[in-house]
Image: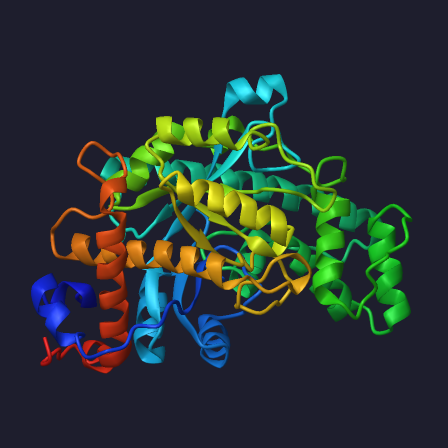
Length: 422
């Protein structure tokens, strides 16, 4: 299947074709969702698109950890459902100097660990053969850690009931795709309890026995809360099935940035921002310093998950980085078992005001323009030297609006592979 954007009209012709359309100030968009190809609240992609249609989401960005395995299904679903697709990816890196100093980046619990995204990558995903090997090595290391956790879980299970066991293959086949993560193991344990004990009392007794007698606060009715509790009590640091990650499970940040650039994407830093007590990590507490650090990494893009942030703090920081020339997008992640709406809101389901929606929509449109220009063999938001093209933000934002509106009006022709209107 050809990338539909490669068949879009050239910019001059595109401008003519949308000249009669009235562009909205912004549309609803979600630039960061995880799918079942890594771990997700969604059981399948059809559910994602069904919810997106119900919520009038115009643009969605797939953003799985380490893998682009879901791109093709996501791409086809976007065309069927008239939702513009952004092709993104997320990595986990390690800053060793910061780790030694106890400096937290955008992981509140693990000093030195950094999450980092690539936005608007080429489709199909092509980071180059060497980067594919490097990425596969990281994935392999993560799966070795998961298998070691399964071994410890089985030792624990045998001490309680020798007939109960889980295997890597069974977890993968039932709950995951090619990538098994901690949250899949927590789901497997929840299902093990439900499928082997008839009464709720026996099920909760089994789970509390796994906890070493600690009482469950989640209970059985809230599956998401129970899986989070299982993960926290058994699989995280201090738990009986915890296995520390090998350093080979992480990529160096500059290699991550290089991989994103090689794959045609925009390097993007996910900002954690404030916690419920208003605290920031050491890396993010000074926005001026954070801005300088990101610029030194040739990164002119940030993303936020506003659902975890105070609305006023969110607005202050978004406006700060917007005034510095950064492009900004919002998302919901959906990387936990909790099923929340796809519409982006701030902490406590507080609505995002129109000023912030406009800023985030600008970022989404620039990513769409970047994908479009790359599909046409042209330069997008990223310059040949890897730096962001800050001077072209206004032009790229307008181009992205045209691309998205043209798609929303004409997606059926591209779904059938017969773009006669082009």
